[in-house]
Image 1: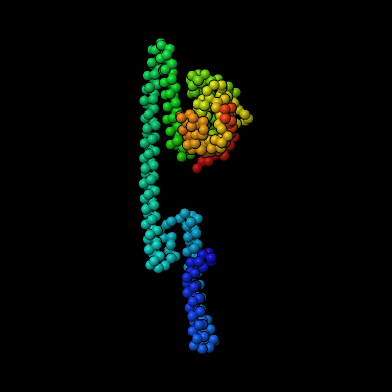
Image 2: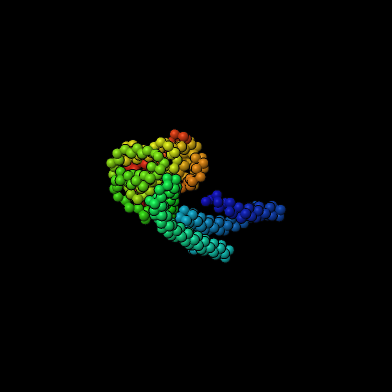
Amino acid sequence: MLKGYMRDRAAMFGCLLICYGTLFLIGYLYDIPFEKTRYIAEFSGAGVFLCLLVDILKYAERWKELKRCIATSDTYPGMFYTVPGDLEALYRSMIAKMRQEKEELIFEDQKRYTEMMDYYGMWAHQIKTPIAAMRILVQSGMDREENEENQKLFRQLQMELFKTEQYVEMVLSYLKIGDIAKDMVLERCDLGKVVRQAVKKYSRLFILQKLSLEMGEIAEIVLTDEKWLSFVVEQIISNALKYTKSGSVSIYLEQEGVLVIKDTGIGISAEDLPRIMEKGYTGYNGRIDKRSTGIGLYLCKKVMDKLHHQLRIDSEDGKGTKVVLDLRRTQLDLE
């Protein structure tokens, strides 16, 4: 603080030095006894010292107040009550105006964000109706159609509809992820049940892509949120199916509370691996596959962090990917 005070008052101290230097110079030129000149300097110096002391105390009070405001991000209107004078009053008015403008901008931005979230939430729910209708129409066509070529086309349509529905579910999860705590129900869940439901959901894709499933015995009870853990497991299985053209997907317990989902797909290159869970990052293989959004693993990481579980990915380019879900963490964030 003292260094700051000296810098802020450098001009004033310079003027004082010039005044005292001028005083002694006049005394010397007019042969005024040095004792008298010194007496005048000491007498005036006492007054200057008292003024400086008062100024230092006010400066220190202002300094502490501003430091406190910075530390607490406090910008209440009377924050500069220690500063006297008309010029400082203008500063207070300017800061108050800037604060008001800032609050208005924040309010407008929050309003636009809320409206956008409401719209996309409504859209995500409403789009499910035409998707369900299309699924019924495709199934009806498959039941009536006997031509093998057309049957194959209908199966492809079914797959694309399923993927579309998964993207819609991802949108809903993305909208909720910022306030996941309000949508979280903590309970002891049957991990095997969660995995079996996810596998059943993607069973048609396993069949259509002719991929084998190797699933070990999963008899484990974990403390978590079943809905959000299901989302993570489904997303990992979806990625495994998307990037595995042939071979198999394995799901098993590596140890107590540690679930592994492993595939024999195209893998992830070493340079992409550290960033693969960043928002929007698709990596080299993701750019080759134009369908990659870079959102799935990001959402999985956010969910796992909120649940205080661990997510780890081990992979080599061309040698498949191993995703490890460590569900042993029981300290949960209930903010």
